[in-house]
Image 1 (cartoon, rainbow, N blue to C red):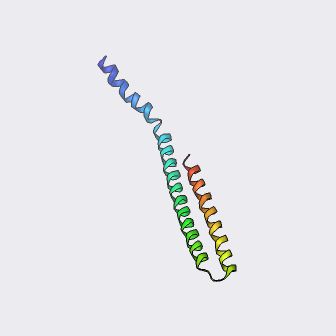
Image 2 (cartoon, one colour):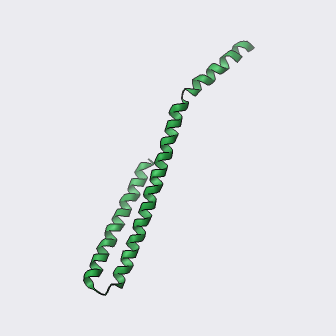
Image 3 (spheres, rainbow, N blue to C red):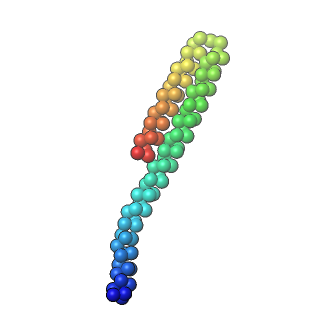
Length: 93
């Protein structure tokens, strides 16, 4: 009986190892998705900071045309940041 168990043990380990490459590939894809999400979130943060900068410049503008252009730029950057954040969320789902 002990010999049968000892002989069956390597077979059991071999069968569980069959899932190894597929599982490893899945884990690698998860890592790639997480890294992609991190990059998108960082890009969103940069866009938000650029939007804040454009808003500050708009407030400091002495020309109404320049102020309007900077406010529009700030709005566009905020929208870009929102879009990037949405993409980051979709990547990890």
